Image 1 (spheres, helix red, strand yellow):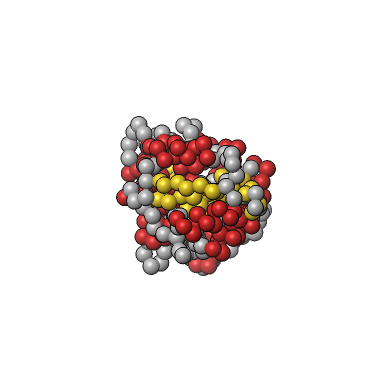
Image 2 (cartoon, one colour; image 1 turned 90 degrees about the vertical axis):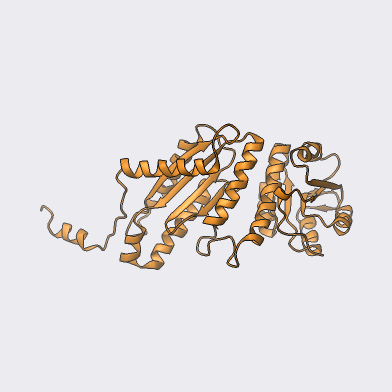
Length: 322
């Protein structure tokens, strides 16, 4: 038995979801509101591991929401059992705030995402389920090379834009706020020329690690060009744009502190915040963030990477004042 893949919420085909949690559970009261937000959802429930496996066999769900505190399958046991029973079934696990380490272990074991039971409501449950289903669909719709950039592991441009469009419509429905950041790596061509393409690839990979540390699992990251990245921050707030930019700049300073490279990584950043329910389109948001990026480049000196072995630097040292 194999789960369905490529479920598209926009075609209103029924989406079969199984909620497995002890009674009474934290997620169960939100299911009614969840189905009002998305009428295509069809939710079944189970309260034990044994019952869950029986429902999985009978109904073949598209997605499982699994509390890791089932009475006959605590911890990762239930996750491992269902993965063996239905390989590839997307699973969102529920854990308490004190079990974040268990949640990280669940992700490494193959869970698609996790939610904290103390913070769960119909909105973040809805958002998590949609995102997991979208990722499965994107893997099917993408060309043979897949939706991810081979070097960085981020969504490539087309996949990023498709996912961003879905997040934009979701934010419109949930009255959410989005922040879009455009990030360019400065001087990458010069690094490639002086130090070789392998070093340029290292800069891109280090930049991706920087972005992953600055943003949440739920935010959308993409490589949109050779030296260009984009981040769509979900559930932003009005003043979050400058805050996100400052966080990224501080992390960049920390990355550049150790003298492990003959240059410094430099980034140009543009950011714009949007309230989809009341104004504009995704294209408007993309253009505004691009305009902010170009304004930054026009009004600030773009920092070129410091190349320690360049002939100009050596000449400067030889001709300097005694």
